[in-house]
Image: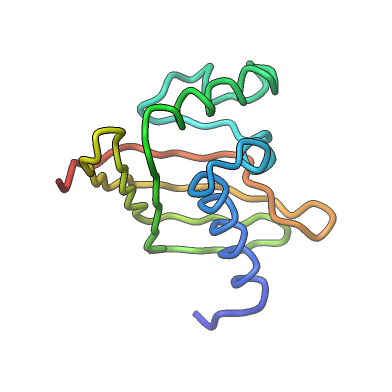
Length: 136
């Protein structure tokens, strides 16, 4: 499939999601996650943003950030499809977590996400992530 500007825009939206968490930018993390209903290894209520307040979401992300020195994400996109204003992505996200004691844990996470374009901007509306196994 030929990569179009629309495909690049969708991949840039995915990168924006990763960057928000890498930068520990709680406001940006909320902005990229606030529309998401998700499923996977986390509990459904936590992943359904309509079930928690903005303040609670930000508190949880702050608490998560306080458990690690650093989080880095990189992804391999194995599939992408855009139909109208809906985009679908699937692949592997590699999470490299540097813990407070300096030890590093790398985890492969299988993901799929559904994005919709609103006012010219891609927003993730549904996502699935589950750990495959620890690499280190």
